[in-house]
Image (cartoon, rainbow, N blue to C red):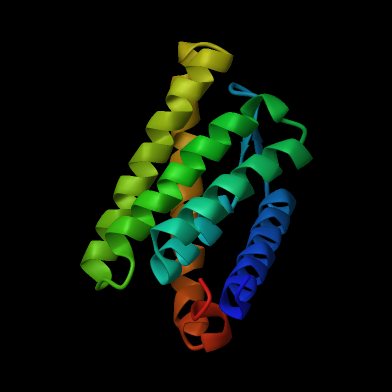
Length: 166
């Protein structure tokens, strides 16, 4: 295993741990869906825009999966793995190394995938009204993630030891 590959795994692991910790600490329960709103999108958007599709996929999928396990919502973990993984991949694929308008569009598309994914997951796990009830909380979660990502991105861009290995 090359030194760069090992560093990439280490950097992504630390980011996943920080994203899970932040999301676990800041969570707002949503009774209608037996779910919660958190800050997982902040880490997904940051990593996807700074590191690309593969990094967004890894951080999105693993973060979403781990948050659900740790928060006591194992019924959601595989949905979160797929939904947040796809969200991270899309944001990275469409927005990595792009200018602000393309990054904004990438985040909007990623957020729409997340919203649709959780409506469908909520309908499968609970019922259709619960799936539809998840929309306002998930919109809030995406907006919070966008704000945190925009605040942190300029600082993280200046840390080559992080961005070089995403």
